[in-house]
Length: 210
Length: 210
DNA sequence: CCGCGCCTTGTTCGATTGAATAATATGTGG
DNA sequence: CCACATATTATTCAATCGAACAAGGCGCGG
Figure: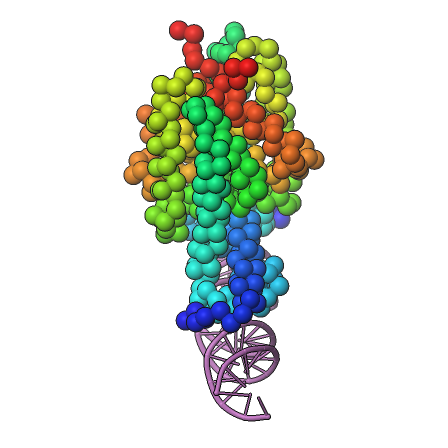
């Protein structure tokens, strides 16, 4: 089975390195495309450790995915705590800023989601059951509560709007390598992130009433 | 080499079946994930024919991709011909409607693009050189010409707006299997396409001045 | 009806895959 | 310093991959 108890701090280190390497490799190459040897190489460890720590490639994938979702959740929670917004517009703006920053910092997230989401199958089913549904309903509830606020997004069906927003926010960073081949620039530079955020706020929330 | 000349109508049929099967398989499974045997099975032909007609998996991929881009181009050309729009808003609305319909009808297109675009590499370089750059500059030119029209999209940097729009339009259909696992519904049904189109027009062009 | 060229099949090759297993290293508690 | 659980390495296996090749089928021109 899996190792009984951590021996010392080195185990967490090796496991953690493998999970980070797996997250990057899976998001770049897809589940089948990322070989366990490639993941082990990126982590600087031996391929046999995949089965030692995780038992199977599938389990390694699930634990790596859980990390990305935990980061997203942590970011969202921290965001709503630190500065409670008063108006619908301020709340929505905070959410968009937080989501854009996360999408730029962790493009692995949307890459994993789009790779599985276009395929369906058991891994996507697992994602929906364990992570996606909760997130989707939280966003939908927020959008429904924003109805009648006069914002452009307030009149749109929450389900459709959810996918529009996710696509609009993540695509630029999801396609960062394409963007770089096309323009020679890096979309994760702060200036691009800022321009992207401003554009999204203009589109979804309308011009600021300055 | 490749076969010299078509023998009769059956060749085009076999080749065409393989190209369509390849387009679907590549978009679902990615380049590495789609085996030549899987493609041949979907087309109902023998695996050896891949090398006979195309010489390599790479060439088959390029020819399949070219089909998707040709359809996009044909749709865009036909759109601008049939009903010349007068105002910037009408032109933009036509473009959005056409792009949404295409994204819903051919999700393979965005699936191929996102699979390669997140990876970079020689295949994406080929896509940029042969297909993407022309499309990107055509859209950018259109967006630049819409400046000062008063539309929400008219004040946004064309490069950023390009990726926002592509993501916003395609994500719903790109993630159709996820959408179905999540909601039990099919986003390619006409009612969803219409709701999606209306939402995008509201966001990018503002409320209609009815 | 035969012969030649396009089309298709079947088989095979080396390389790579996920996984299992045996052997070895490490290091801490007794 | 020994013993034993944990951690790591090395090796191996069946399955599958893209590709190459030999062989045969098919159809039309002569």
